[in-house]
Amino acid sequence: MLDGADIVVDATPSGMGVKNYELYKKVGVPAIVQGGESKNAVESSFNARANFENSIGKSLVRVVSCNSTGLARLLTPIEEVYGIEKVRATLVRRGADPGQSGRGPINDVILDPVYLPSHHGPDVKSVLPNINIDTLALKIPTTLMHVHVVNITLKGDAEKADICELLSGESRIHMVAAEEGIKGIAGLKELALDLGRPRGDLWENCVWKESISVDSKEMYLFQAIHQEADVVPENIDAIRAVVNECGSEESMELTDRTMGMGLSR
Image (cartoon, rainbow, N blue to C red; front, side, top):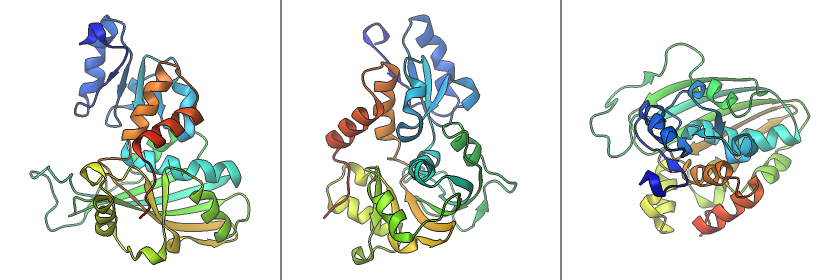
């Protein structure tokens, strides 16, 4: 397989990808590993919206985790337009993926971890090094999706309408409108299934428009992240970056169009 490969996308369990790279390196094949690997073990960490160019021509690239991907997608356009003074994010994490019957919790809310910050903030900084971010995380008994409670202190004043317009222009962010009647993650999964998405995948961040609150430089919102799906388009874009096929905008547009990005009834 390696003799005929231009690049390897390694989706093995955490810790295995970097070990496997020793084999790929022997035959001169570059590799993309996943967010469970250490950011210090790779040449660059990748998010298509935040830092596509950093991975061009690299031999070992890590696509950051589902939560870090979601935060990077959200924060990048806000940083570009308004500047960010500080981010505080609370991650309410699913306990396991649907098929992981051996994991929990079953009847608990676990501080994951107890100390601050959780690993997610430093992971976001691996693709957005200038962002001042603190994260904390809880693990709860659901298998569907993660939910982020995000507070951002902006450098410039903003209005809710402007923030909504900005985020609505991002292809990998879906603004959940009030008229959709979706108040939780189960409704989002039902929407994806109704639209015929494979496995009910939600590749997009789902930001509740109603939740966006802006008071001068302080803003708050809720977003949901489908842990099984949101890094799929990122891996595709990472392939194009590593082999230097095209730039970020062209790659993202092609990926989004081919996959059918965008949630609409």
